[in-house]
Image (cartoon, rainbow, N blue to C red; front, side, top):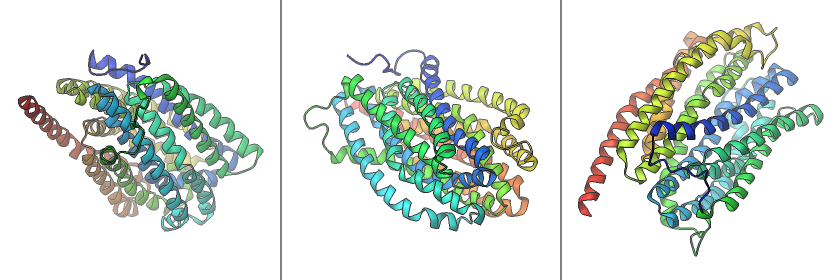
Length: 455
């Protein structure tokens, strides 16, 4: 008998289904960002501004690599969601097994390569000398944890593709608590510096991944392999790579623009780096609802595409966009009135310049949160429908916009251009994604109509 937490999103009220899936997913993402924020808070409070800047200076290159891992895992979960919608359990299990084989391969290869290259990349990014060693100590450990990243994101993605967004929340909550305790232990007791914060992060994520694995084995009979379903299967791997690699590249291509922008920020000095670090950590926390909306649309779109219910796809998209618009307004109001108070979590009240620049960064971003909502909702819906290659083009649009800001605007307008670099990137991506979604829906209507005629 299937676990009661598995959710079929092909029948019932789209808004109710979206909310019931989104809310647990949101709390999971908030917990994930919580332990990312805790790293920054503890580092900033106990190790100082330079240590905070060191951790922050690695954000874009970390996103380029870790984002690829997360994107690949998200892509792997899409065929699982589609087969769940089709009620094809054997094919579903084969995709799950081959996701595991591919994740093992990717994690070994990527860990080997990026650990060797991370210091040259930081030097190329013109990381300030006073924070270079700290940045390297942090990012090297994070990259050593790539297998843990694959483990958790692959398994939690599969669980969510079956309609269960609650279980990953529970494990992330446990992971968040563990991360806080390990942060304090490694930094205050073991005196490991910024490397201690990195070890706390990867140990916590690995632990949550192991919990996901044992839960899946025990609770999901639908995933119990039969015959040769667990063995490597060429066609399944080709389909998974066709979904996963484009989604991973979309993250990485987007991050290239962030790396270029971070390089421009680095040229403005440690104060600017620390301000962007604090602002980015806060902004990432506020962006969790958008990430939850995107993940929800990927599962919702995948299941309904598998069930050939295109009318439900449009209804779900409109409902989610409405949620995104309402939250965008709420987020801006909160940041406008409370950004100074929130920034004090990261730096002392005496750091007047950092507090001021952090506020401007947050206002510049939150004022354009609705375009960000569209980026996540539309892009992940397109990916859930099986057209993940289009995400690469959207990523190129974001990369080009951030690169323009880094190369041309920051040298002329300084820190002010940094505050509006991401909004420019979001608008550029939307300019492609909205017409792309309409194109995908037309193709699906035509494809399903042809299949119906051939039956």
